[in-house]
Length: 193
Image (cartoon, rainbow, N blue to C red; front, side, top):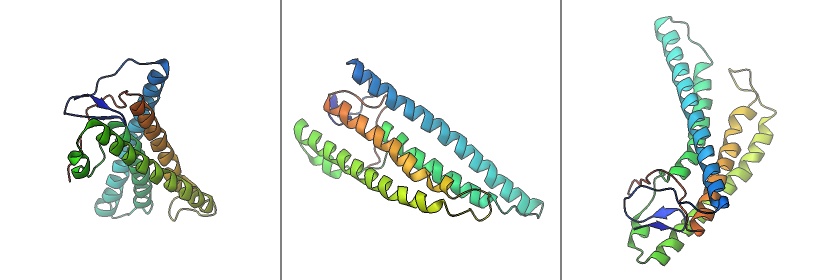
């Protein structure tokens, strides 16, 4: 099978880049750039979080001089890492999905509309998350972290920023899918439930 609108594929073949219009190439390049930047940031944040946890364990159990800030720093780094990974997952099509309904829909048109409907539901969820997280960030400007000398705006900003990136990715996915183009340049994997 080949590509389906909505950025989905039939069969298990890898995705190939389809030469299309300048708009299609721009959208693909934009999605790829967001993915690379978010993936790099996830790697850096995850590495920093690992170092913070190791420092916390080392100082607590080896030097018997616990650092009060390592647990809080690692928590905020994890929030940013997991939130950024949402747009990476959208780009690569690697989020966990319930495939029992799409697998039972016969015909390319029905499957296409179902997958588009799912993408629109995800988009709606991301918009709602972004909307409510903006108020959370606004309220956080009056709060300071417990053990770090930072405003709580920094940790809470992870949600609207990362939901915004995921919104851009899913919109590009929908537009390219409706135009019959591929979204991701990697093979889609699903964890069947």
